[in-house]
Amino acid sequence: MTTAIRRDRVGWPDLLWLTWRQHRWQLLTVGGGAVLGSLVWLALAWLINSTGTTDHGFWFIGGLRGPSQLIAELPAAGAAVIAVFWAAPLLSREYEQQTHLLVWSQDLPPTRWLLGKVVLLGVPAVGLSAGFGAAVLVLLDAVNEAMPQVPGRGYYVPFSPFSSLSFEAAPLVQVGYAAFGFALGLAFSALTRRTVLSMGLTLGAFVTVRFLVGNVWRPHFMTPVRTYEMYEPRFRDPTVVDDQRVGSMHIRGGYADAAGREVPFPSVCSDGYRGGDEDNYIKCVTDHGVVQYFTDFHPADRVVPFQLIEFGVFAVLAAGLLAVAFTRVRRR
Amino acid sequence: MTTTVAEPAGTAAVAVRASGLGKRYRAKWALRECAFELPAGRVAALVGANGAGKTTLLSVLAGLVNADEGSAVATGRVAFVAQDKPVYRGFTAADVLRLGARLNVVWDEARARRWLERFEVPLDRPCGKLSGGQRAQVAFAVAVGSCPDVLLLDEPLANLDPLARREVTGELLAEVAATGMTVLLSTHVVTELGGVADHLLLLARGRLLVGGDLDDLLARHVRYEGPRSDVPPVLGDVVEARHHGGQSSFLVRLPEGPRPAVAGQWAERAVSLEDYVLAQLAVTRKEPAA
Image 1 (cartoon, rainbow over the protein chains, first blue to last red):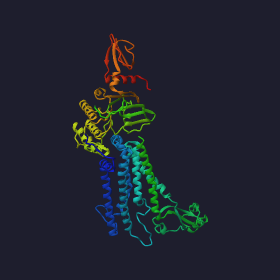
Image 2: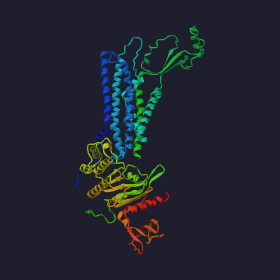
Image 3: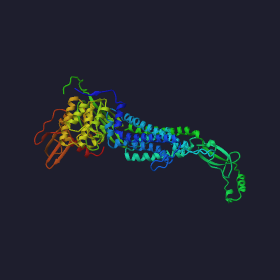
Image 4: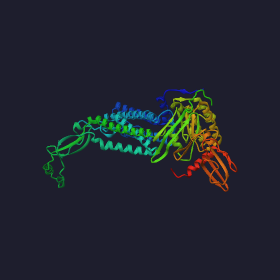
């Protein structure tokens, strides 16, 4: 005589119940914070768009341009929070409290349990990051739009497409960072089986990789475009730039001869120059072959391809790290 | 136990079969060349010194650790309760039962709740606030509720008071009688095994030293006590010899066949499970590492 209930398999609703029961506070705090923050950024963007200015004071805040600079930094922190507080303790806490022995000795293979956790926590993590990034981007666009434009003086905007803050807030890029952070934390969690150690290593590695890809590798994603101008040492208005270079990523500039070959700047010419004989100075420089000034840059229309590449880099890293975590759990 | 299913002679259903089982942690073998068959419906005791490989063997059988060589097959569904009786500290006992219901394809809620009621474990308190003994009962309740064919228990009696030990073993035997499940439990508390276990697996340094029906094993071993002597009064393998003053005591494994009679000053004593296990463990400790 038995009162046992039988069924075919342990399904996703069961994994969902377990994940919610175990991680509901994480999901509610980070999820709630991200949703609340996004709504505030959208409200601020609406305010700026409808009034056409960022000059709105609240309490001690003088205007919205400064705060938007701070808000723009938040998406970078979001993926790190997910990596360190969601993923890094995920397996290690089970190992430390021995609860993996409880949960893995039910009718659910450990790899399916892990798949459940990865999907049911990873998808919200990625979704929250994308949504939060999108809301920040709406605010940054509103701030850009509200900048007073002076005719003939270029198009200065505080958050140009290639500036790291707006480049990285893009939802697609945020998805890459969140997936990478989650997989990184999970891999360290599986490898170290120590929560604090895994959290520390995750933070260190996340910051390092983000810095290396964003600051060292990103300028080399594609071959930069080179433009030439006639060499002109006299004063030039620095805010007046070629249309092609508006919103671009500047790589470097240098001197070239008439054929466009790069030449080193003749420092001998400036050695004797003490602000007097300008014509003589120009003659010295041109005698050394300097005819043109060139600029290497990535034009603004490369932003989306660059974001795709950035996403691809982090997505590949995430896939590799997930494979490490799964392998580690399968080979017990 | 009566059964209406006739088993062909000599092939009683096997609940757990291990052959050539080995598990290595880096260069050190925790378990090696382990082979046994555990008939269904038995309560088997897994004994051995610390570090003998008991937890490794149970973990391999539970599917939590992959063997490096050989194979282990358990028939049907397996439940395992680890040594520390782990449960999520933030979960209430009711939550842990819910976990059992959610993560098992067979679940008997009434059976699990009966176990908690029997041991007076409150359902609504977080496990982190329960006593160690109560937490252990929650872990047992999940294992029992999942209606296993084979129940593996690592040191189930540790951390329990003497009364709770007796009650747990009593409840386990009742579950075995009611369901026909097979139990394999590791333990240091050999004294508590009398009347509980009917099968013995004795591990020493990762190798299976003895495996078999407990009554058969004990029937083939006899202790002889008498005047000081270098040899026992009967033919057979000396498992343990003790000499104290003018007295000698031999634990002897008798050869097959009728039990030989001894005469004179020799006294013949039946061997208790504890006596037998301790003698075996003492021998393996004296031996140099294999």
